[in-house]
Each structure stands twice: as structure tokens, then as C-alpha cells.
Length: 352
Image (cartoon, rainbow, N blue to C red; front, top):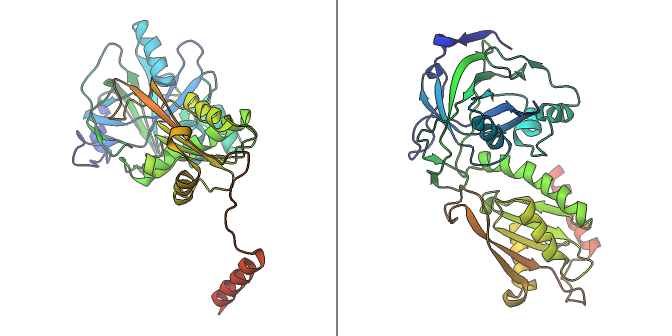
């Protein structure tokens, strides 16, 4: 809702409550900005989260380190000597965040259409004021501008999801040409770093995406978890009911191929709750032998923000913590009637 509009010399990012988050950060950062851009060849819209360091009245530094669609758009535009028009959305419907900013699909999928699918109705959009990029009509703030061609400036450090102040950056620059917002707009910020507020935004859509991919090849996959202990990005736990020896290893390799950031995949049986890390580690302790059930694949593409990578390459480790198909000792259990009686006693006391 464009109740307040500023363009040209009126643009001043200093009027927004852009805040400092951590001691190590280079300065104030926009942490909840979804950058929307159009494919230079097809016009398909992509939306993705990117950190943005306040660099001046109408200038922010950003990093396209995910090396996904926006990075590819900018690369192709720059090869033509063109700036890439963008709209930065700060604050919108939660389903827009998940349907556009966090959803990862094929490069030919228009993510405004995906957001409409999440919402159950077409996403209401308005045309850009200074750039040919539409934005959600109900956004709290929209910053319009361009990712400059052939321009790189130092950006960072910034406290990333790894728990470290990352100095790795593609050093891109956005020049802001317009700001619009509601009169009583709410500026939404995300606490960065390894906070659960930040990392859970990574885990929730990635778990759903990985579950869909794995079930496409292995229908017995029960659940997928990206645990906080692995920054909700670098480790993945998979539960399944293998139907053949070696299937758990194949599932782990599928996960590595699908998500370049992963460094560790642990595959467990379907009786293990992958959202309870104690259960996963129990399965590793009692169903895994390191010389038989661990394998490592060296020199694969990794997450560039992982400080342990070697120029962006990493080793991948998989642990098969599933039971052999030929038989295994049974887990001890409690009788169903005893559990039901205990539950009834607890519920009865709660009602007192």
C-alpha cells in the first residue's frame, strides 16, 4: 500500500530503522529483505532473501553467495553491460515469505505464482515506480533499485547462520531509486547469526523440499530434519524403511546432490524420530560401525559461507545408521495398555 512514496533525491535509507545486530557486523543491516528480480531472458520473477549492508543514502551492499537464480540473473545482465532491476520487499504476508522468498524451485518457475499457490488466490501486485519489477500490494516497505553492473565494493563482515562473522561476499551493490511504504508501516527485522529465528527459516522449507525429492525415489522415506546443531543447513537426518541393502547410502547421495550445502547426512530407520536428536544419536551409537557404515566423498561443491570449506569445496560424510535387513535385536518397549493407563492418570490429574 503506497501511502508514502519517495523517489530520486528524496530517497534516504537513513530514515528506516535499519539496525546493528552483532558486534562483528560491518554496520547496520537489512536482514528481512526479499529481493525480487526478473530473468533477463524470460521475464520470470524470482524472489530470495539476501543480507543488505547500509552503505549510504541510496546504496546498500549485498552478497549473492547462494549462487542460485538471482546470481545467475545478475551474471547474465552484467555480461550485456546492464544493471539488474530489483524490488526489495521488507515485510509481507508470511505465506509470501515461504512461497517466494524461501521456496526453491526450477529457474523457469515464477515465484509470484508460487506465492499465489500458497495463499490460495493470486498474489495482488502493483507495478514498480522506478523499475519494471512488480511488488506485493500489501508489502510494508518496498525499496526499488538496480544491482549495478561491473561494480563491486567491500561488504561485511556479517553474522551468518554458521555462528561466525562471515567476510565472504560477492560484493554486489544495489542503488536504490525509490522507497514506498504504508503510513504506519511495521519494519520487520530478523535476528541473524545462528539464532533459531534465522535458522528455522532455512530449515522449514528445506525439509519439505528434501522430503519431496527423496520420496520421489524412495517412497519409504518417513521424515527429514535439518537440526539446529547443524545450523539448520549443513546437517540432515533422514528416516526411512530400506527395502534393500545399500538403499540408505543411495538416499544420502541423493540428498547431497539435491542440496550442495550439506556436509553430513545421517540415515536412520523409520522407528527413529529425526526431530529428536537424542534418538538419532542413539541410533548412531547402536546401529552403526564406522568401518562399515561411514563413507566420505571429497572435493564436492559446498556452502561458500561455511568457514571450513576450501575455496568453496567440501567433503561430504554419510552415516548409515539403519539396521541390517537380515535381523537385529528388538528395541525394548512398554506395553500399550501401560502407556494408555499412564496417559489417563496424567490427564486426570490435569483436570483436577
